Image (cartoon, rainbow, N blue to C red; front, side, top):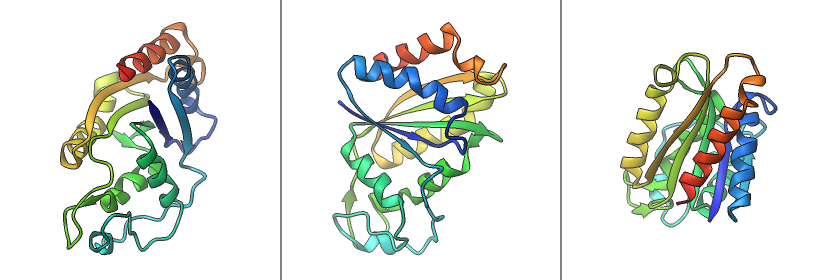
Length: 188
């Protein structure tokens, strides 16, 4: 299985990156091909809402020629996409939000072009947060579930860990084993 981890934290060596390590290790142990893509170091403009992508059949077609095209290549390569993000103010961090806002070119529902460039992909969330689990993650998870339904993606679930002691929170046996178990669940 090809697994794309879109790491959406603005901190490339922060809590979310730390929690991605055991997840990636287990994916590889189970024989998956893993592509880890950080978003904070990519130049991704916000969606301008022009709908030009909806007139381009068979390809992404966005007028913003930036690093989102590399993200789309990764998405098209992957069988499973893991959206890894810290939760800030009950939603994903800005680098991830820009990617989610730019998904329009993957769905051809609003113009002359038709079809989808990612229908059938599997999707999961890996989240880090300060508040208690569901209270912190429910709004983002609900948004992702709706995106998956709208885009004909298969939503597989969420694994999250609360920040109680900075990086140490994500190195505990429970956090590491939880991430590995989540990886195994996603590959079934």
